Length: 143
Image (spheres, rainbow, N blue to C red):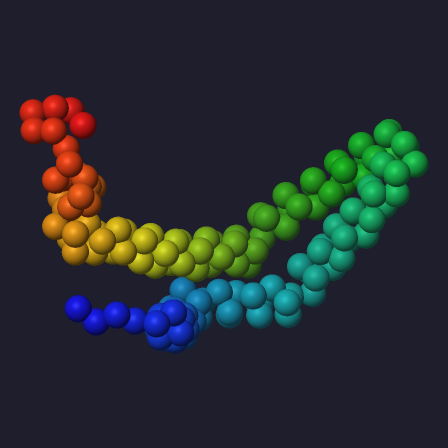
């Protein structure tokens, strides 16, 4: 059985990362992000939210609770309006899709490493036990 260095594994991980960066999901994300950044209405709404957030921090700092509540309500309303825009919904969905892909890759790596450890030690993949666990369990017991 071949053994690999950490550096070789990192190089392969970078290769997989480049592959992921060239998927339809990432391509759609890049296009959606560009549309967001080029959309005047979205930029203005985000600028308004940021400005209101700064006001909220100041109101909170100075204990102006009524003014803070009003500003927070305005922020919430603007965020809801922003989230209702199709361009923003598409962008957020593209973020979810890319994240899902990354989670699938991470999970696949983790599960494969675990299975390979179990198999290489003569263990039982279905029970999730390494060879030493199988050899040291008492027959007929629930261990």
